[in-house]
Amino acid sequence: MTPDVRPLVAGNWKMNGTRDSLDQIKAIAEGVQGPLSEKVESLICPPATLLYVATALCTDSPLQIGAQDCHQNASGAHTGDIAAEMIADCFGTHVIVGHSERRTDHAETDHLVRAKAEAAYAADLTAVICIGETADERKSGQTLDILKRQLSGSVPDGAKAERTVIAYEPVWAIGTGLTPTTADVAEAHAFLRTELVKRFGAEGKLMRILYGGSVKPSNAMELMAVENVDGALIGGASLKAADFLAIYRVYEDLTA
Ligand SMILES: O=C(CO)COP(=O)(O)O
Image 1 (cartoon, rainbow, N blue to C red):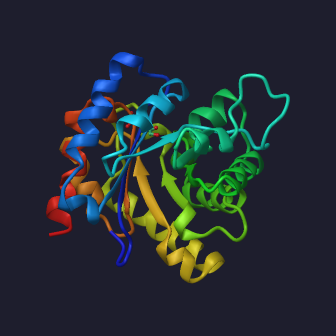
Image 2 (cartoon, rainbow, N blue to C red):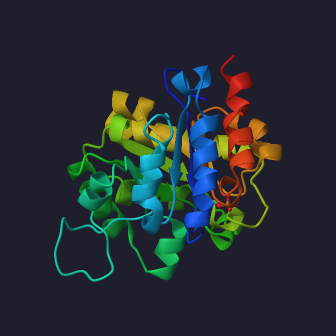
């Protein structure tokens, strides 16, 4: 955790979820109500098909709803894409950009991810900007170089803490059940904090840096307790309300 920074527990549903899954969103929206929500933010990013209905389920809940990607342009001839403004129009508050699956499946570059983050800001959305090294990059000792390059390439100049969340997701930890040691997480997050402060000054101190990659109820406490870890970006375990809420509730102890 970082002093004066409100943690964010976020779920990325990826390409999972149909209308049947709205029950899980409803349960999460109810489960995050209460005093902890003043200290810890929560967010679920369902597939775009569920976005509008999901936000309608959260009108009385602190649970925020976001999208998983946006186009870099505000509108136009881009078949199949979604503009940041459309996400805002569905009452979405956040958009994930630069997830490693999009970098791989759609050849997204740091330059493009930065443009998408700028599009998010223009629509008053918070950009959740993902970065992380592959297994080979870690093995060859390049982790911090890769993080530095992705961070400087993907985060727009003038980024503000209020609208910017960094998610450190080691690619090899996503969906594998593997996680870095807490020492490795601490090293990566401290490095990212230093880089953010160098570039953005006081804003960089307040930007949230989430950890993502095989976060589960069983390991959430040790990962979230690491210095400079300001929350989680959860894939698989966010699909079940009980698991998401169990992770969210580790902050009952951490913020006590
Ligand atoms: O990619 C992730 C979240 O964006 C992490 O996914 P898992 O939690 O399923 O490893």
